Amino acid sequence: MIVDVKNLVKTFEQRGTFPWSPVREVRAVQGVNVQVAPGEIIALVGQSGSGKTTVSRMILGLEEPTSGEIWLDGQRWDGLSERERRPLRAKFQYVPQDSMSALNPQQTALEHITETFLVLGGKSKGEAQSSARELLSSLGLEERLHALPREMSGGEQRRVTLARVLALNPKLIVADEPTSGLDPDRRDSVLEALFGNLPKDAGCILVTHDMSEAKQWCNRIYVMLAGRAIEVLDVRKEEPQHPYAKLLFDPWGAPLPEKELSKEGCPFHSNCPIVLHSKCAQELPLLTELTTDSSDHWIACHALCADPESQKKSQAPISTDGETP
View 1: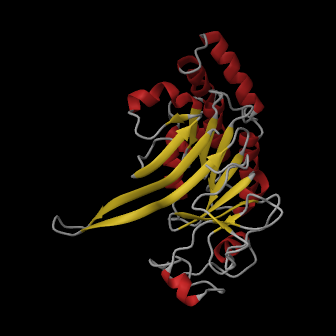
View 2 (view 1 turned 90 degrees about the vertical axis):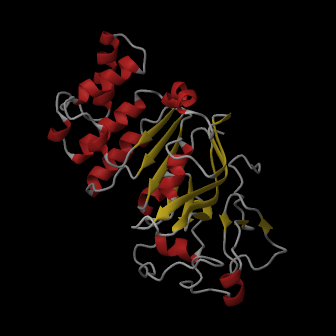
View 3 (view 1 turned 135 degrees about the horizontal axis):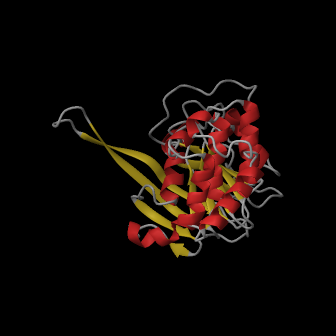
């Protein structure tokens, strides 16, 4: 496994306006398990505030977990100091949502990638510049080598950011909303540049709220709600079953409910059309393996997993090789 995340929890402290205001705990992530196998592309999907970005940032060590374990390429990652992580960071790369802020406004596209090959790739100046030209050309930027970030379109800025990541031949890429704010045609070009140039056997985590992107490019999807994964499925074999996931994936269906999520029981129960009132309001559902032809479809729903004899309960989805973590 490139990524093996076990029971990840993140709690933030939210302080009021005044010094004497009480401190409130905000549970951003609650017991999430994620696995990424070599060559696999997964998606973390959900509305804003679902916890998907926080999970992705903790995986890379950009946020520290409150509890849980993070293993990257067989090595325990959480708890390491930044000095211990620094020699390994080139293997685990992050594509930020705001590409403009990640680029030096005084450097051209060619200078950005040449510097990456020089500083982190260990190449000579001539080799670095030649490799940078080749990589940028493969991403459709052969005519924009000497353009500054402010002279590029949004899609071109994203592709330069991707080139910096791909230049390091990483084992894991975490892409946080890489197409946010782009026109549909530019979104496609950015995703084709990313997934069409992934290093061999590299894993990728796509953080997105665009369900069509997730279905088109990803092997497995983790549907996030209120800091938890409430459904995990292979979209090439199965359709979403959780009432929240079905709304999320149906562009022509009813709009997502705007009622506040419940703090007790299932967070979606006050909006759910198939709610079992007593159980759903009082007991938090665990991820449960559905009994289907597929062995990797998991769901957290009392109503859909009402028959205990035909279901196998677990707090974590199984990995893609069929072994429980």
